Amino acid sequence: MIPKDLPKAELHCHLEGTIPPSLAKKIAKRNNVELSANLFEDENTYAWDDFASFLDAYDDASLCLRTSKDYRDITYDYLAKCASEGAIYVEVFTSPDHAAECGISYNEHVKGVAQAFDDAEKDYGIIGRAIVTCVRHLGPEKAMSVADSFLDNPHPYFVGFGMGGDEGHLTFDDFKPVFDKIANAGYPCTTHAGEHFGPETILDAIEKLPISRIGHGVRISEDEEAVKVIIKKGIVLEICPGSNVSLGVYKNYSEHPFPYLRNCGCKVTLNSDDPPFFHTNIGKEYENGHVNFGLSIEDLLGITRTAIDAAFINEAEKDKLYAKIDSWEYSG
Ligand code: ADE
Ligand code: ZN
Image 1 (cartoon, helix red, strand yellow):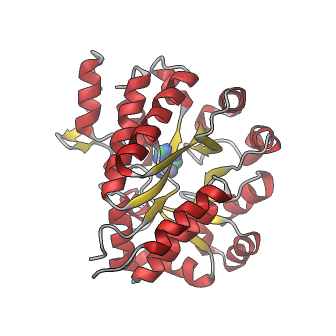
Image 2 (cartoon, rainbow, N blue to C red):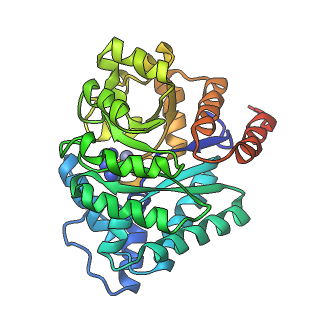
């Protein structure tokens, strides 16, 4: 077992996908919302059996939300849990489209999330920041509207832009104007790519979009030359092994390309994606990295440093986090 307090950092988790069933039910109850009858397999388990039904369940669970305080509560709940797993820094993806679906405005969602970042830092010392994401299968018009809300309402804790959703819909070309607008305004970007589709989609993302990180990107491992390209460009991979195994991208951990990519020299990080859906969390991802990928304590600290290097925050904020990593002592 690795020490629980080993400093960890997470760059890839979907805020609306962090809500555990118990909290979704509690928030739904106080909002008088009836959640879909087949959302749960049992009291503590979401029901889904493939990527499409996972995305549906994730959408349905988020429908419990109604207010800024709901956003505050799910964010605080998540950061408190991450802090108890030893996380010192977490970037959450927020989805204004999901908020809008619940009647929550862009600024109300920002207010709730930002309040939780302040509260969690005060209570646990953990730093939270948000990346605003658009949803690929909702198309470029909605994506542009999310981008405009982001640019028109700057907030110091909302530090970058990204895209999730179904990779099977549309192309990166379709979203180029959206990402270019964000990058021209000076913000860093990431996008999901190469989770369900092959290396060519990752190369396409790098060619078309102004991104420094890729969400997942694991299928780059199928093409040695493509691996060299992302190494040369210094692209950081937000890898989510538990999610990949849960969604069947890989049958098990021994088939997962994390060790291969790391050995090739790719910049890799460990992340939980949608923790309650995949029965994981940031602590388990680090522990699994130790048990299944043979990562030592020093290796894992290196992965935390890589995440901080790639975080969408300034150098002064990074220095405080590096100092936390450097001053941590292994007492095992
Ligand atoms: N949205 C939430 N989880 C996702 C995933 N694993 N891939 C793409 N979009 C997502
Ligand atoms: Zn994701």
